[in-house]
Amino acid sequence: MVIYCIFEVALNNETLGGFKIDDLLHILTDPEKDDGIFMPKINLFFSIAMRRPEIQSLQEIFPDLISSCPNNDLDEMLYSLSEFSEKSSSFFRPYLGALVQRLCEIATNTTVSNSVRNKSILCLVSIAEGSPEMCQNEPNYYVPVFETLIKVSSEINENSPWEYDMNNTSPYQTALDSIDALVEIIESKDIFS
Image (cartoon, rainbow, N blue to C red; front, top):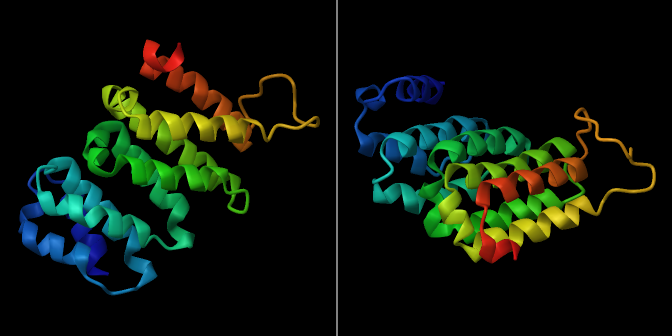
């Protein structure tokens, strides 16, 4: 498909492969409902947003684009979101609350795979890694995130191992590890006092 080629060229070139921004934005807003092109679209979006975050229409496109993620692409989309967040999470400031709420819903949803739940949790940490100042000063971030991590941590049961096992991929272990990571990243006396 052509969109895969455009994504690869735009991703690997500082000038977005010489494509006009309006043409790339048109690709992103094309209402075609082919689930097979969601991942190239979201990756193209992140490529543009990383290089040109000042483009206002990107802020307008993101909520609809992210909410249109097909369930079968959720795992891969969360991976891409996490990668982007580590470098450019301040981009999410205008709708941080809605994004965090969605990630928290996924993290606590026991009907989705552990892999998807864990990636959702890791996205929450990546957002803080990318912009600790934003996250420590934003109750729409730290309140629901810590509530979610505590809730997921409580899924531990009497059959769970008592010793730490770095190969334990249960969401409760990811949540416990994430609490530790966030306490170090955020370092806010106002939150932790």
